[in-house]
Length: 134
Image (cartoon, rainbow, N blue to C red):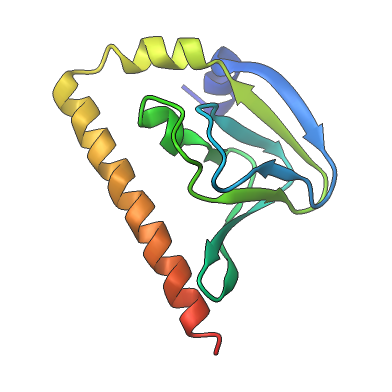
């Protein structure tokens, strides 16, 4: 299945945002998953010595998936900020949850473990990035 077909099944709504809009804020709670449809966005993380960009999202990239996969309103690990005008798709959480729940408990535990590791690595990278800027 091509990405376009996959997205057509899961996108519940679309939103457009101007340059520098905060699409998701670090520290907020939420479980929605989004996909970049047009444009780009920066993923930023607060660190002890400032804010660092840890990734750039392009069309087809998802954000918000960590909170969703942790099965609750988890704290957002990073902010996502529009880098120019951007159009995003909001994924249908109920459909995602129904499909996710068809996975075995063992596989869901594996996914949860990987998400925890990704959170830790993101934190460590942001701290290292600000240390090298001195």
